[in-house]
Length: 376
Image (cartoon, rainbow, N blue to C red; front, side, top):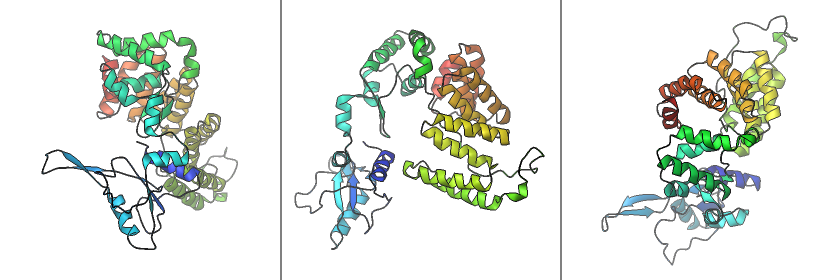
């Protein structure tokens, strides 16, 4: 299934607009495979077309058969109601039709060409999903494509995945499997490794306790702090993970920084946008500028550590993560990524306390099972 985020980005790139609800202004609706419910009535007047969001089907027990039966989604029902009231007309199309319309492979085509993580998990029973994702983080395998619904691998990665599965099935620990796979590819690691960590974002502004010192070249009174903070709040609302609004969010952060060049929260969040686009040089410059302005924001140190790690600069990454922990020892992801860094430097003994700290701080975290394996 094509993820909502992917669908929204495609629509925006083609000049369209998306909405969360179906209304009289809607012109097209994409319905996911589950959203159509049971086989449609042959006399149905719904016409094909394209949309703002993917609908979701629901399953309810069948009184007659005692098994789940898919219901038509509420958005589909609403679109059909509106179509029954001329002059309203909403084109309704399937996910596959939408993919063909915008020129991207359908989910079925992707599965024929590549290997979906879900299918690999069903085939290789000794591997868990977090095992595969950790192998990705270590650069041992590299996804050919990611969607909101699944991650796809090309044929060359199958041999590595099969080897890891076989060794685990024979009783090897995952740590030893990882070490062996990394050792076999050591010459490529500096180029292949991408940590893929989510940057830490500042959600609320921190007011400075003291005015800028004598080294600050411009007096505090010359900044429009209130205006800068207003633009920051606008940018934060736009910076919600929707890729189609990222440039608008970046422009608002830049406006805030024009009014107050020392608004560290703006520097960090603007750097995060560059980081999400793989513009590492721009992101690094902004994180370093933020640290130069105020060194007590752990987010800047943590995010700068991610960049160093992505570039294979593990000693620099270690230093940044440790600085972040001094400022905020309760951020679980810092412990996790510092542990990963130390493992890469072949310093497992130093990594163990951070694996344990991650377990304690994020008992439901996505990497908790992996942390348990590495902390033993």
